[in-house]
Image 1 (cartoon, rainbow, N blue to C red):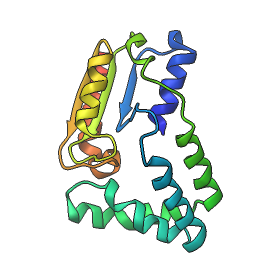
Image 2 (image 1 turned 90 degrees about the horizontal axis):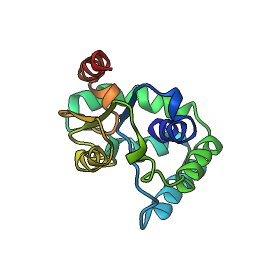
Image 3 (image 1 turned 90 degrees about the vertical axis):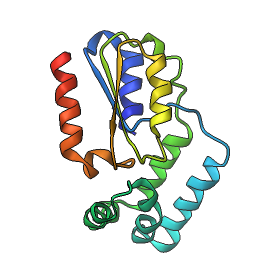
Length: 169
């Protein structure tokens, strides 16, 4: 959701932004079936707990590196277990009521980094390419073998991409 927050800041105060990095970010409106899918996860959190939510929700977010996924899963599960179902409900509500952002993209006049994991099924590289075409001065960087959690899955590659981009900003 960080990318969505950054885009709202860009909408509200574009003069205050000198560069924008959108990592694994989506810009689409609520899709068919999304409310039902998110509601199913929310019911799981309330009925079976946050551990059950983590077991269901996390695996599809991860990339193809099974060893790295196995290494990260305990940390990610522990993070989700620290949430409450009510906190998750707030996130679900925010995502289902998200504002339209496509109209903001062509107005972005600062250097913009788009970063996506090659295995990200939630915000795939093809979606990032579509965003790149809408934002002047945008650069797309693909993190091979990473999913939606690219900064955790491939922190060194993400750091390199951010460093290279920041040197240009």
